[in-house]
Image (cartoon, rainbow over all chains, first blue to last red; front, side, top):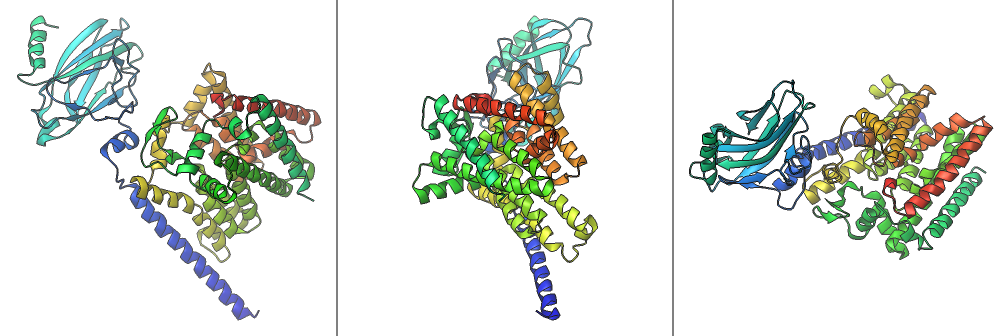
Length: 212
Length: 358
C-alpha cells in the first residue's frame, strides 16, 4: 500500500469516526430533550416524579371542599414522603423541619375560607416555644404555636385568598419550623376545611366561645 | 494454555454450587431452588415484556422498568431458539457468561500481575460467596463478562470493540454507562489528556468508543419515553422500592451504628469497596479503582440494601483481595477457607429464600 492510500485511509477513518461522534451527540441531545418533557398522567407525576406522597394508593388525589376533614390518625396517602412519621392514635408526627400534604380543591364548590388544625404536642420544659408556619400554595396561612404539654389543641387559620385564586385546583400545604424538633413531639390529628355555612364554621364559633 | 485453569475453577465451583443447592433445597429442580427475589422480575420481563403501567406485584406497587432490557431479551431469544423454559435458560446464560468471565479475568490479571497471583484472583472469583449471583437468573453474569471484555479490549487498543460492548453494558444495568470513566482513564493513560482534548490523530477510536457507550442507555430511555411517556421511568420507578438518593456517607455511618447484623455487614463491604478503591488507585490501577469506587458509591447513595451483591460482584474487588493476600500462604489459605464456608452459606441462604440475600 503506498503512502497516498495510507493517508487517504487515515483521513477517511478520522472523518467517519468524528462524524459518528457528532451523530451520537445529536441522538443523545434528542433523548435528553425528552427527559424534560414527560408525557405522563398527573397521578404518575405526583407520585413517581415529584414524590409528593408518602404512600401509594389507587386513588391518589383527594378533593377537598368546605366540610372535608382529613384524619391523621390513619395513613394519609397525600402526605409528602419526608417529614412525617407513621400514624398512631396521637396522629402523624412532624419529624423534620419541613413536611407537606398535596391536595386538590373541588372547584365545583365554594373555596374553603378557614382550616381547623387539631394537634397534640409535648415539649420538654424550659425549651423555647415551637413555631410551625403553615403555607398554602406558598401563601402564608399563619403560624401554629406550641409552648408546653398540650394533649389536644385546636388552631384555626384563614385560607389566604391568593392561595386558591383564579379557581386554582392544586393545593399544597406545607408545615415548616426553624426550631429544633428534638425536644418536641408535635402530632397533627386532623385538618378540617370550612367556609361560611359549612358544618366546620359552626364548629369554629364553638371553639372561639370555649376559648380553646 | 491459559484456558485450562479458569475452566477448571469454573467447573469445580459450579458443580459444588449446583450439588449443594439441590441437596439443601430438598432436591428441588435447580430452576426452582434458585428462584427467589429479583428472579421473579427477570422471568416476568423475559416472558411478558415491559409492564404498560405500575401494578401490584411482589408485595409492592411497581412496574418492571427498573430492569434493563439486554439480559431478559437475550434470555427470551435463547429460550425461543432452544425451546428451554425461561428460568432454565436464564441459569444457562448466566453460567455461560461466568465461564467466559473467568477465562477473560485470568487473561486480564496475567497482564496486570504474575501467574500465581492471576491464579489466586481467578480462583477467588470462582469460589467467592458473591459468585452465587453469577449463576442465578440475574444480570451479574452478563454484566461482569461484558465489563471485563471491555477493559481487556480497551487496554489492548481494540477501542471499537470496547465501545460496542460498552453500549451493550449500558443496556444491561443502570450503572453500565459508568464504564465511560474507567475507559477515559485508560484512554488518558494511552494518549494523554491534552491529546484527547485536542482530538489528535490516533485518539478518534478511543473517543468514539467512549461516546458510543451510552447508546444502550439512551436507546432504552427513548423506548421508555415512547412506551410510558417518561424517559427516566427506570429511575423514577425506584420510588416504589423506597429507594431515593441521599448522601452515601450518611448511609454508611448509619449502617455501622445499626443494630442489625446484615446492615453492619453491608456497611462493612461498602467501606471495603471505598478503601479498596483508594488502595487500587495508589497502586496505579486507576481504571479498576474507578470501577470499584463508582460501583460502591452510587448504590450506596440509595441505601445499604443489596450492597454486598453490588460490591462483591465487581471484579476489581477480587483483584484487590488477590493483591492483598499474595505471597502470604497462611492468609491465602485462610481466605480460601473463609470464602468456601461463606459460599456454602450464601447458597444455603439463597435456596431458603432469606431476604438479606437480595
